[in-house]
Image 1 (cartoon, one colour):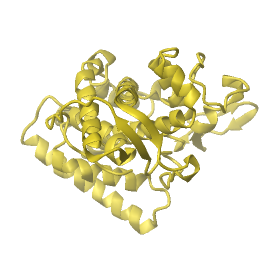
Image 2 (spheres, helix red, strand yellow):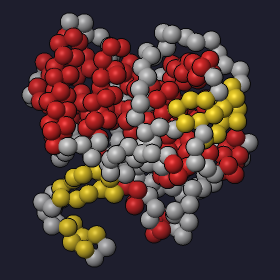
Image 3 (spheres, helix red, strand yellow):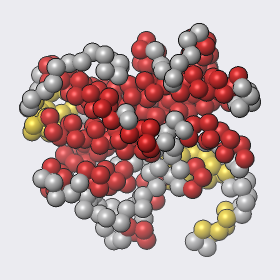
Image 4 (tube, helix red, strand yellow):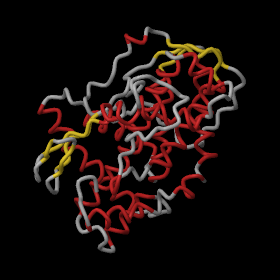
Length: 334
């Protein structure tokens, strides 16, 4: 779907649009909040320090998309590892070939498992679409499954990590949100702009000659989409474009793309981010980085910008009982 154009793109996008309708996504809020509370309760039980990535930022969106997808618990850690391996742009050719081989194998096993117990989940719906001829090949089915499943967690994981880092290193901005002077919805848009998890997206191809700012991109040329650069464009955001500012009201960021390919999961991502940040900063007192911001190590990727580890300290406030049935129990490291 990402590389499709015109009628093919509309056909593929239409298969997913119902599952990601904002009204349907809004119904997930209680379960996402329950999952966030459970993860924080587990963190609190282990003590006043944690790696926020592997103990919260990875498992929250992974478990959300896995439940939406109907992914069995035992397969969740495997798809996390495969997705991060694919995003690693420092991998060797042999490592890339191995990952590319393992991915279709993973999804063939998933398809075989789901065929035996189709349910009211996204994977089942896509399998039925293949059986009905709406997806025209097994390759299309596997590509759709991978796109939705992987993009559904790695991007949100990155924004959670980048957002926590931004707020903890800008305490005055955090105070504006925690005091209620700036709503979380507005702060999240600035986090999405300033801390977008998709830094660059290779490659799109011009379907016709396009002129941009006096430069012609010829039809067929490859284009690297540099979202971090676009989200700091002074022409769009003014002279303070490089500044993290939760009071920013005019915020036409491109973190979800634009036009026909605008992200289908935008409503789900915004909901997960609201649940994540309100839980983190509502339940954990004195949340602070355990290392200097300049020592944070990021994923070895020029596509995804996401901390590998984010050591924090905190003082837990009142935490709920751990609910083991809420949205699975996947943990992992970026």
